[in-house]
Image 1 (tube, rainbow, N blue to C red):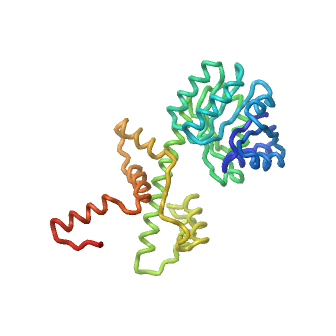
Image 2 (cartoon, rainbow, N blue to C red):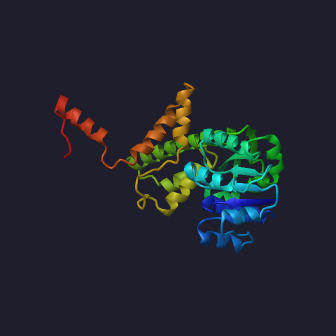
Image 3 (cartoon, rainbow, N blue to C red):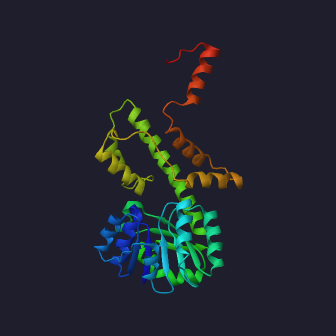
Length: 297
């Protein structure tokens, strides 16, 4: 098939490579020209502008947006839609908020353009292992684009979830579960690191991936990290978040679904960014006030 890819970041570029390997014709646009040149050398067709990019695609055009969630996606969607025609298809493969995807689908519908939201998991390993794809939108549009999803995914690694927004909703929950799993691993390894035994954490992380009930790909990645830097001394204890955990937690609150593991994992990420927490200083002050407990100046 033919597809246009806008956005050649860590995932977008590797997705283009995988599509080219699968025999698809891929037209690309990225504001950083050097990234375009990298995929052009592998067989992609480059563009100097969105207008030129759209002109190189046959009708009905299939355009995959792989840009940051939020305003950047809105801005690029608006720019692309200046050149769309009835029946064209736009796929948002980024980590967009599912309610934004529902809104964008309605905007596309006004111009008789098809829209799909594709929650995409696989990270920097997707080129080799494939991308797990959670897809929302009309079933007929999904069927038309299925060869693309099939090429990007491993075997049994893509699914049409349901209507517009459902793909990004499932990806949102997927990432929230990931938050909790990572927090559990982090806490467990810290307990072992702090204990009186001289435990080789790198060997334990490898051990647990052999028939243990806690084995997982995340644990394989933990083993990789510990093998490279056993004390993780090259890292600062700062953990960012890209939104999915917050959005899922808000969804849980709105639906009155208890989600204590998710809540704690989200708040721990916030805590990691506080070099000198006011709340911690307040706790120390209160202990000193009521009990005369010593404080660290």
